[in-house]
Length: 104
Image (cartoon, rainbow, N blue to C red; front, side, top):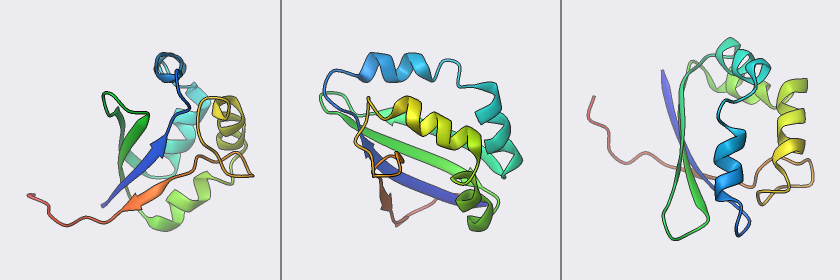
């Protein structure tokens, strides 16, 4: 199992809408995530900022990368782009974090 952590950023004023759109997440997107080896996935909001911290446990880097190629993921990105800082392909701007400690 691979642990991944990364940061994303909301546009100002969209925190509540971001949370609403994730509760629940689309069933087809959940199916894609689970089908591509995502074992756990959480996103946290940092109070007082627009920063999001995401943590995922995945089976493989290759399966994780393949998620971005699915139709469900592309539609989700398009659905969420008004709420977040995004790249030209509508994917969220994200900054990967390096693990420096783990107690297993």
